[in-house]
Image (cartoon, rainbow, N blue to C red; front, side, top):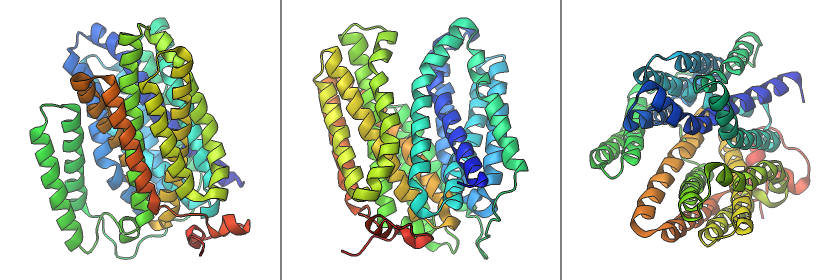
Length: 452
């Protein structure tokens, strides 16, 4: 691996890990933050919601900006801005400042996330993307698992503000490196303009959707705005000469299937974690720390599954690998829905981590590999949008079903969501030319399925 590819991989992993760590430590911080800043519960909830609305609504547009002006440049801006905003949150005098700076964090987080995948697509040949994506997924799993433990230790020893300073140094270091180390020359799309009206319509659609899902059941107005904005966006995209979503991305059945699978998998995964947390603490009487210990097999299985998936993909292809993994996710949810003992709960979590980690690697590779280098940012933005909207959808559905019908019904529905994702994976490619011949195929044609 060349020095440039090692730096790209390290930067991609660092960017993804910082975002994952930030998201998981916040849940530990919120109760202490609420007490020390004298905030209401609604204000504390908005420290999460404001970030989520900002990041989810801008991911695709940020990816398109990276396609035009260079992913390394956009990554640098995103990392530097994210680090400065994190320091600002740590110094915030009141909850209003925290909410405002979380919006700023979301904007810069939206810039850096698609760029982490766009840089990989530009640096690695299509047939060599499996392992870099697997490494990235493993580190995300480690960061997500470490977040609550690190956050809890810092809050207890130093205070809630210390949690937000965690991101500052690595963000600034990798941001400066991305600015100073020369990257590959970006090929500019001839005569293609940035679709600002399309970007605004898509942002309105996604922001309204996220707000509506978070605000259930009082969400009718938000859902209506989201639907109207979506219809206007589709109409605009069909008429404009320079659409935000290029045809090589939205016209690919494999990419659409992979995005549907990522949406379903992340919804089932996050919804299940939400419901099972209540079961462990309210039904089984476990404390937060005991519950967290039972969830460790999930993180371990996810970390181990990611590199194994890169090997399996070369032998079995994305369709079989991801389809079986989604079935494993569904099985895991059903196991957890009927578990009453520690061994069964740990087994269910291990299955969930293994299945979800495998889907993340397989479907992400299809999305990133299936797009051309010139559209890699948009593809990465769509992928990140799916894994941001999915958890919100899953938690909203799980919360509503848990309150209305109990945990067993809620988890059964979430298992059905996972099986729906398996159906979406039927359009994923099978084994590629490279995997059948065991010779690396370079260039964009490496992703073409072999003839049978």
